[in-house]
Amino acid sequence: MFHTRGDLVDSHLPPELRTYTHTEASRTMSYTASSASFEQLALPLLPSLYSHAFWLSRDHAEAEDLVQETLSKALRAFDSFQAGTNFKAWIFRILHNTFLTSRTGIAASRTVFLEDHPDLLGTTTDTSPTPEDHLIRLDNQVAVNEALDQLQPALREVLLLCDVEELKYKDIALVLDVPIGTVMSRISRARRTLYQLLQPQLGGSL
Image 1 (cartoon, rainbow, N blue to C red):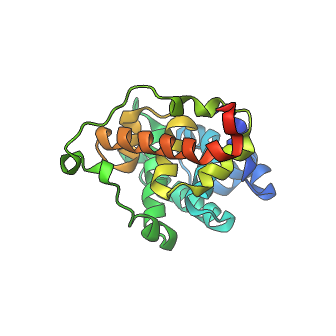
Image 2 (image 1 turned 90 degrees about the horizontal axis):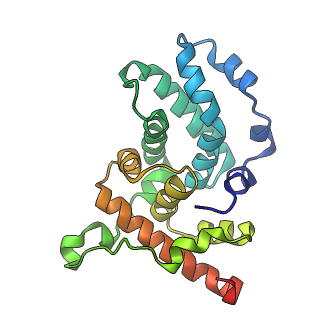
């Protein structure tokens, strides 16, 4: 887990989004929302949705547009949400799919990892704990953020879903629409790459 979830989530939110209160969101949504339960489920996730959208797009304006479109799509599709299942995973999947249709998302989705195709590697992904798994205990959040920024988008997204949003592997697989094995291999690669990026900056502190 990342040492300080709040630092990572809030550090890239523009000022106008940091003050985007639940009251303002409710006023915006009240014109179309007929279900109070949707607001109760969606409003607490606004900061996480904005933060994740920004990490995906790397642009504040695009991130805001992505979240607004995600909320609109989620509201229209809310009747299809199954009560008792993970709403966070459900709405993050909508955000992910919305991003993939954007120009930034189309470019990012072109990356293919060999680890996603273990049949080509002829080996099994090692999911046992490694030193890389503990790097997120680092106190230097700025260094972690800078290293995250250097990760390829697909690796950054899976790591954020796991270690920031704290989704389970099965939920991440739902969000990304990939097998759990692919989720595990990407997380392993992301942590390994992040560890390598941080070593020159932090030296022996790892």
